[in-house]
Amino acid sequence: MTTPTSDHAQLPLLAARTFNPRRYRPGNLDDWTGHLPFVNDLIASLRPSLVVELGTRYGESYFAMCQAVEENGLSCKCYAVDSWRDDLHADDAVFTEVDAYNQRHYRSFSTLLRTTFDEAKENFGDGTVDLLHIDGPHTYDAVRHDFENWFPKVRPGGVVLLHDTAARHADFQVWRLWEELALEYPHLEFHHSRGLGVLQKPGGAGGSGRSVHAVLSASPSDQDFVRHYYAMQAHLLERRLGESLAGSERDAAVAERDRALAERDAALIRQERLSAEVRNLQAERVAVVADSRRTHGTHDSLANEIASLKTNLATSQTRVERLEAETAALLEQRLDLEDELKRRADEEQRLAQENIRLANDLNVVYQSRSWWLTAPLRRLFRTIR
Ligand SMILES: C[S@@+](CC[C@H](N)C(=O)[O-])C[C@H]1O[C@@H](n2cnc3c(N)ncnc32)[C@H](O)[C@@H]1O
Image (cartoon, rainbow, N blue to C red; front, side):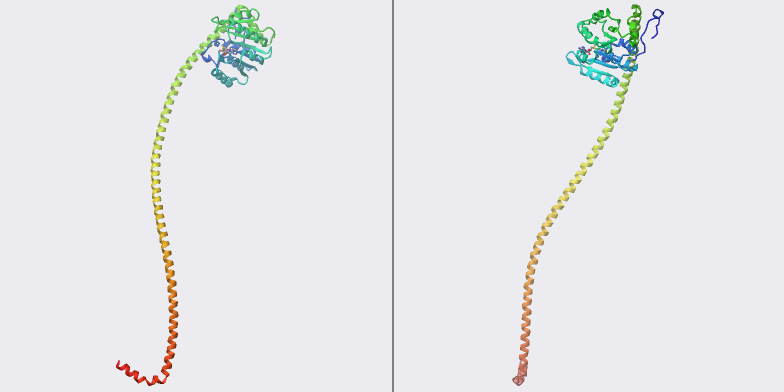
């Protein structure tokens, strides 16, 4: 940052950088947006090693600090303390989104502590915190309680930020505490974006807190200049991001329309493909039904064939049985015949022997005398017959 007027030529300034916050108005809230350029320059100048925020919700302030830590190449641990509990109801959806964002961008050095401010206190040693941002409850008692609890954790030369110092509606009473603290510590207050009080814990002379100290101890007119400078930066940032937001909203609408058209085209193609698939399936179904019918037909004819084969088998079996019975009867007949034949053969043999015996007897007769004597008689006899 350069000094634009000769009036402020000696003003020590913070390491001004153009800041393009990655997380802009999360949850559509812009309470903290106006302080993003300052907190970025503050971190670049202070070069903290330990940052703690009390009250994070959507994380606009917290992630701007993380971004500044990252972009300035600092070796620094950051902690966001919040119960993420809206009154009695757990704000799980907000926490889930913030946690995912943290994991995506800053998990190597940033930790979310989902707990109360009082409980989280025990995790930090006294005099260790370089930058403490208090943005929790806003009643006087509550914010004083948080300040008193946590101020001992801040190292000498460390910086405390208090948001909402300019808010005076309802229970917002940070301004009362701020008025008391401003009497005690080097400080600067911004009035835009609901006000931001910046104070430095005494001690820790020199080092990285020197330029911050110079700004916080500057004359009222120099501080006016710084205030105006950052109010202007806030305005420029909001205009730049507001315009790019409008542009990106328009781009998003066009992209959305293109996406819807592409989806419709894809749906048409899908529908066409599905129709073709339905047609194929219908054809397949017809083929399957025909096949099934054919199979049933084959099955029926096979069943018929089997039934007729069974009948044939039964008939054949009956025939076989009948033939076996006939064979047995024939066999018996054959045995009888064989017996008969044998009997006849025996008879023939006996007759043959009888013949032989008769022939012998006849021969004896022929040889006998009477036979010869009666021969003429027999001849006469044959003639008269
Ligand atoms: C105003 S919001 C913080 C806004 C935030 N810094 C931003 O950049 O938008 C206050 C947060 O403090 C938290 N809170 C209030 N009292 C708390 C307590 N005692 N312990 C833990 N969280 C608390 C609330 O849950 C709420 O998310």
